[in-house]
Length: 409
Ligand SMILES: NC(=O)C1=CN([C@@H]2O[C@H](COP(=O)(O)OP(=O)(O)OC[C@H]3O[C@@H](n4cnc5c(N)ncnc54)[C@H](O)[C@@H]3O)[C@@H](O)[C@H]2O)C=CC1
Ligand SMILES: O=C(O)CCC(=O)C(=O)O
Image 1 (cartoon, rainbow, N blue to C red):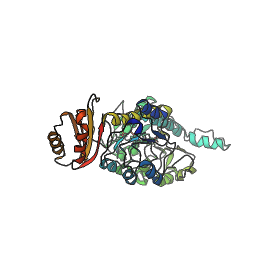
Image 2 (cartoon, helix red, strand yellow):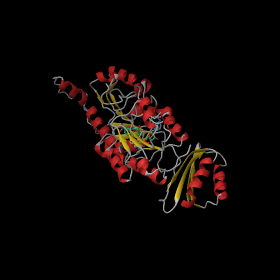
Image 3 (tube, rainbow, N blue to C red):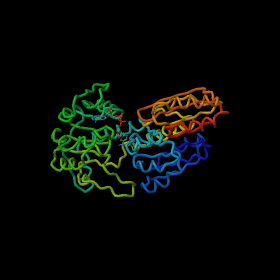
Image 4 (cartoon, rainbow, N blue to C red):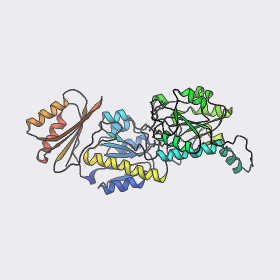
């Protein structure tokens, strides 16, 4: 399958899930006006229909880009995840199809860390329960089950962008910070890395999860893990819904093993704000339930809009794949007075030789060539004189193993 570069007004962009207007503004500022903007995600069958004619799609966490959807997306060049998590996209299928996927790895991390810090303070004081009772007209003025954060141990699971910021903020209010991560991490402040999860669970007054969704993090916290936590500990999950076994958590709350919890993400989340939220946790006053809003602040969404739209624009305009999550990363200078060919191919021996031989046969001079590969695909970018560009594209598209080829003038 190959593609010829289009004029910008023909490049069709579909933005879903109400991504911030800053994304639309960024795209428009860069000359992209053919934008369809929807406030919601779409069910798979509708998405399959809509995505057929789209060159770029922007999503958040609710849109599932399954293999079936990607297979239908004949024209799709890239996906922008206007969030951190990319588990909603079949990244391997996208890669095989030559579709680059970008995200915003930092822009909402501060927002998540701030929300979690607030939840720690509220849960340690037993506020969610007192609040719920007061709404029902009950007056529960008591220091029972109400504690300062100072001196308590916060156990962070996953010490990445969010975990580290949370650790620093928690230390600033006098908490002791320990963390567990599968990687050896540079510890910030006075935080301490512990060697295994059980150790962390046994020592912490509050456990907060900040890991990605992976096969290894599925039900990372289940019945057995909750069992080893301190009596009366608190559990916070603002990472992904698959990380905590919700039934096990509900049981632990029922038996008062845990004093409270804050859960922002769920194994199954409503597809829109009109759908009912169902969960066994709804019955517990001592659980803060939030509708996956850890990263939903004006500041974060605005920054994400600019960041991800900027990455899509750059990939469309000059071929740069820097920070793509499923693609070999190629950093490219601006294109001036030449044409640029972008070629995604299966990573097998001889592809580059074929390209160079074909170009030599047609007397096409290569002004610059950039190549990066991973175990599955190769991405080569070739700058040529514009006079030769159409022949070069034809030759490139005929190379065995070609997944996609496009041209920029
Ligand atoms: N609730 C919300 O609205 C939001 C949720 N998130 C979620 O938070 C997650 C974490 O975000 P960041 O801190 O930015 O990611 P990050 O990639 O910077 O950090 C993740 C850390 O988890 C560690 N890790 C991975 N697997 C692990 C395992 N099995 N056990 C222990 N540690 C493990 C990694 O080594 C890394 O240090 C994201 O993947 C996303 O799913 C992110 C933003 C908003
Ligand atoms: O804002 C969203 O829709 C999802 C936020 C999130 O979970 C992420 O950035 O990974």
